[in-house]
Length: 478
RNA sequence: GCCCCUGUCGUCUAGCCAGGCCUAGGACAUCGCCCUUUCAAGGCGGCAACACGGGUUCAAAUCCCGUCGGGGGCGCCA
Image (cartoon, rainbow, N blue to C red):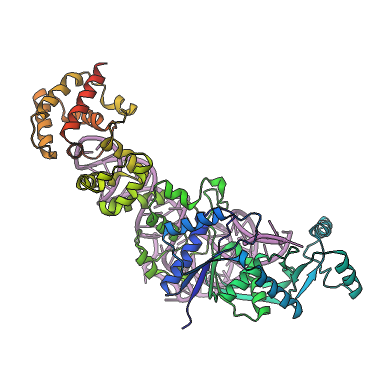
């Protein structure tokens, strides 16, 4: 069987957004599933709007998601000559023609037609030139574009997701292949490159569906084999409009920076439109490759709703072990100046117990950093809501010093030992253990919520527990 | 305006191609209860959908037609 070759061909006129990332991801899954090749191509023929900075960001986003490519990146801007040669060849074969019209002239004619309520497509003014007119125009205008001659008839193809689709050629105008400045348009460069790199399957967004017949016509004109097409439904925002900047930040790297794991994002994106058809929510990359099939992709537009991503991310974080989480946690701690190299050396064991203590309760890695702060630094404040809820009891300022006295002689600061001491004190004083527990939680973490308190105290240690309790007593007295 | 795609709980979806097993399943979200020192997690339960109208058929979420809704395209952007 022929090798399967697919490609992702972003245009570096913007960052890699979730829609593009999902398209890349489906291409990647398809290639990996069939032991094919995943090729990366940068469509930078729009010189004015493309930038190297954007290209870098796109590659970074793909690497973060784990979408590695087998060939490329190829840059279209380096292949201009080649596109020009193909266009000239079509001219020689009578399948394309020179167009001397300026965009302004065309716009004028179009406006007129539209004003008269008529349907407009390019009027083939330059196709029907007499030899004399042509000569005159050649002399008078230094620039000319090349247009494809769209023959009569219709084009039918079988889309791998949508099924059979037909377009009548009367609805397709003689589109431009080469602009007046000699740069190729998208239709030309995409077909030439897919042809030359032997692309067998074109998997892209639905926004390209109506471009497909034009491109098939081009393949035919070039005598090139026509690849299979699969068009993915576009992701919509919660207002059911096409996802855009209006819906907030949708750059893939934004999610990395907000503390989402690549695997969570991968699952989330893959499961917008695709379902392996079983009652399972979280998959490993290997499982997704194994189960992937274009036939299971839904045709209708999914809506971008972050609640599921949050859930996926929190489940993944709590399932991962400290070892796996370490590199991510380290990166985020560094940003907040909370990282210390000893956490992966002499204090590694302690640090891992901290990760294990906190990981069940965070949605993102950012949440992790917020809850980790009191364990790594003395620089934290009392949460106002927690003060209101747990520190208003007047008895606390007399009770807490007694607890401190109980804790001071302890040799072992194991959770069950500390718990025994605290509960005994509560019983002796005739108050609920909860009163001590909540106040102590506020003392050591500053927050009204935390993992089970005695586990927290064990990780924080005796010295810090006592000094923070003393600090709280002072605070209560003032 | 013209062309193309599409329509199952609020959301992601299973079921549709090969009609009966569907009083439509799961998950997220949400609500309630249990667990509990807090918050999560977990367990149990609730709310909640076949867009609408015609056909075909003994039988339709599943097949056909139409209507309506949503999306995309109609660039010398990609």
